[in-house]
Amino acid sequence: MLITELKEKNTFLPFMQGKTAIICCEGCKEVHYPVEQADALQKELLSNGSAAFAVVTDYVCNPEHLLLQLQKHAMNDVDTILVVSCGVGVQTVAAHFTGKKVIAACDTYPLPGAQGVTPLEYDCSQCGECYLNDTGGICPITACSKSLVNGQCGGSKNGKCEVDSGMECGWEKIYRRLEKLGRLTGQPIKIRNYAADLITAEAKN
Image (cartoon, rainbow, N blue to C red; front, side, top):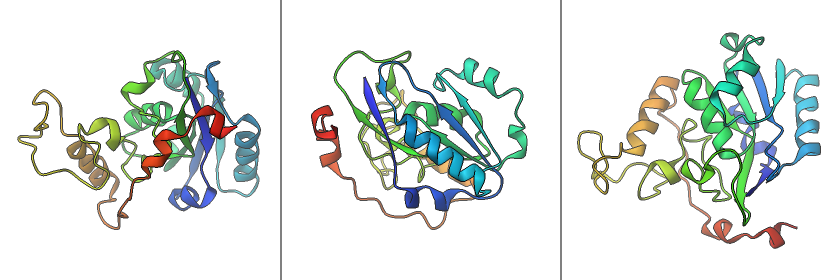
C-alpha cells in the first residue's frame, strides 16, 4: 500500500510549458489519494488557462486501460502532461509519451500492506521525494542499481550497469530521454532527503 500526496505547486508549475493536459488517477482502493486537493488543483489550472483539458480515470498504471481512456482526447496536440498519481502512474504515462514533458504532481510514501493492481515497488520505491520531474519521467532510485540522483557513476559499459550486466544503465536511459526533450542543460543538483524514507503512516496522519 502507499500514500500519494500533492507536491508544493512551485515544484511542478514551472515545468508546465505549452499546451498542457492533466491526467488524474482516482487511485487504487489500497492507496491514500488526495481526492479533494487533486480536484481543486484540476479546477484551478483549467479555470486560469494553465491547462487545456483534464482526464480523470483510474488505474493509470495499466497502459492498455490508460490508452483506452485517452482515445477521445487530442493527446498529440499537447506539449506537457501533468500527472496526478503515484510514481508508477507518472512513469507509465512518460513511457508512452516519450516526446512530451511529463510532470509529476505528487510524492509517494509507503504504507504497510499489500500492493494494488501492479507491483508498485518495481518502478517506484515510494521514497517520499519524487525526482521524476528532473529525470524525464524515469525514476533514478529504481532505474539505477545505486539509486544515484545526480548522474551515472561512470562504471557502465556498453550501456549496461556495472553491478548487474543484464541491467541497462538507468542514467543512460535518463540521458537519452532528456536529450530527446531538449533538457540536457540547467538540471539542478539534488540532495536526497533520506529522512523521507522513514516517514510512516502514523507520521502522515
